[in-house]
Image (cartoon, rainbow, N blue to C red; front, side, top):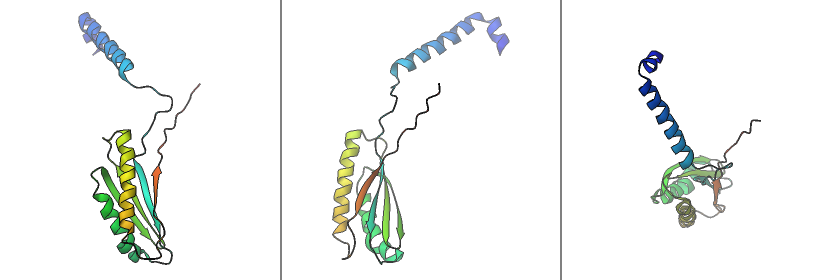
Length: 142
């Protein structure tokens, strides 16, 4: 490979120019922030139901919440965990949505959870919709 560039110096010059132009183009177009702004696309709905076993919580709380959330086209994935005393439904919002659309989606998620809450039996606690902040860890090397 190295002899190829010695035999054809024009090819070497072309390769160097392509790398330089590509690097310059990347440097001018890529965004740069010390701490990038990340959109909260992940979250969960936590609903307490003291004294109930996991099967009852699955049938009475988790399934209605999952069904209500899956009606939203902005939702990428819904997974759930039902344990004795509480239900946790994890939500993932689609990656192609802008920051404003993600904020609107969280409002829609709260509305869908409130609609599902109407089906809950008495004794079920208030569902909490929480966003998960996925931060960017930066390393400064001196």
